[in-house]
Length: 464
Image (cartoon, rainbow, N blue to C red; front, top):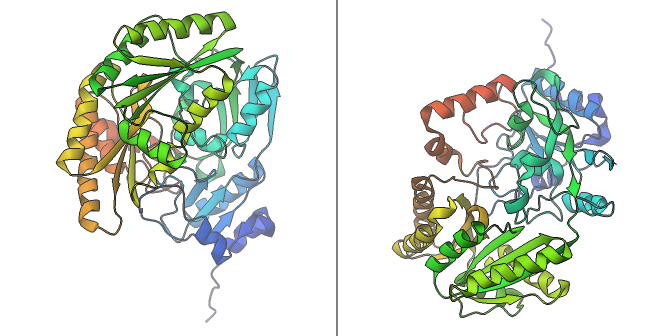
């Protein structure tokens, strides 16, 4: 009898796209088994890491993987915080888009065609030299990629005024089941033909297919901006102040909240002169013309001072940048407080912020935990950080129980379990809480329509 030699799928992949695009070394496989998720998650070392350089490469990869039933874990820069890029099956491969970095800007049409591996900040800098503006600004913008931002529907401080990534994706090209290519949308602002499949992919976290190209909308760059710092003695006034500002006719480009623990953390990490005795701060930015920004920042100051709040306006761009650097340093600053951190990004309707902020503190007291809260309060998106000692398992368990109550609180106010970090691995069970049984079944149906074998980022977002 003759024995049939089983084909090695990795060799098939090498033959399909070239050996230089397939890495099977143990060190690379281990390096690409992580992302920036701060808590331990289920992860496996993949059988290979693939580096496509074109849409054609991606088609070939998916064709082989679909034939061989190989799970595919797409990856941008690995800056996600919910395990979205973490491989969960040893039989799978990681597909890194770091070599797909081409883009083309059409300034007359104010659009761009961008490959997924383009670094967000590099793209923003390029278009701003042309007088154009790509607003989405996640904290990781200096190293995160456009593809990753689209997969997670990334946000950031400026998204209060300008909207999240979804608002700037006019169309995508993606590879779905069996290596089929789907192209959605066009470089036009109005297009209501059929279902909006583009928006299915934005925020899908790589579970529907692999995006190989995106058409992005650009807008004119605002010529001026100003920043103010408001200092609060209590949390309830913060919530009321946000409502007053947002109903005054002024639309800030950013409205950021920092609580007392966050202030102290960042001042101990890299001091910039924030008042360490304050209960909370608001960082307020307005943009527009030179004249309008001065008028708007003065109006914001009048509103807040009328509520008994101290306000300081940054004298120049250097001082404004220093304040914003403090806000962006909050993430690393928390690492100095405790060895363990659970970072959730819940959302509340703005009208409930005055009630919800003190209740978050109550959860921290109930579980005897250090809680640090900051975030994009203008759109109700708060980053709730529960800090604990990794060596103290009992304290870690208290933090995990507290997280459940944080999500319950957000949903009780008709909010959301995530505003920008996505669902990934860490929030799967909470997605059912938000969508309910019927909604969750629809999500699974959409997933299986594009990926009937459940090979694209399996185990993330929905369980099928």
